[in-house]
Amino acid sequence: AVVSTQSAITAGEVTPIQTVSGWSHRNAAPKFIRTALGSAGVWAIDDGYKIFYRSGESWINYPGSLKDISVGKSEIWGVNTKEEIYKKEKSTDCDSALIPLL
Image 1 (cartoon, rainbow, N blue to C red):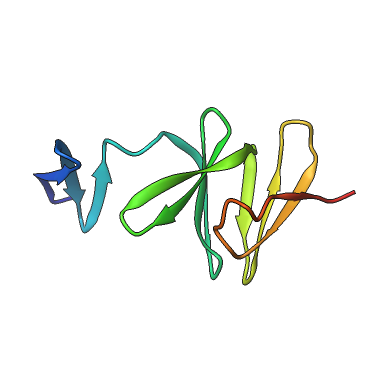
Image 2: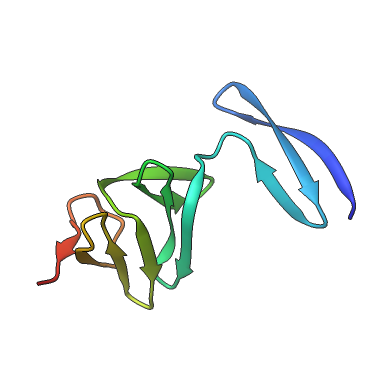
C-alpha cells in the first residue's frame, strides 16, 4: 500500500492526514463505533453512544444516544442501550427529534 502523510489546517490547528491507497484518516475525528450512509446522509455513533452527522467537512453532534444506527432513503433508524428503536426523518435539524417506536 502507498502511504503518504500530509497536514490539514482546521480552525487554526494542524491535523496530520495519512493517506493509504486513496483513503485518508483524520486524527481529529471522534472515535466511531458505528457509521451509516444513505440518501438521508452520513451518520455515526461514537464510543460514548453520542450521535453525529456529517455536514460538509465537519461532524455535528446530534442530541440523543444510540448504540446502533442505519440510514435509509428518507429516514434514520437507531437502537439505544435499552434496545428501544427510534426513527427520524431525513432532516438534520436538531428540532426534528428521534421518535421512539412502540
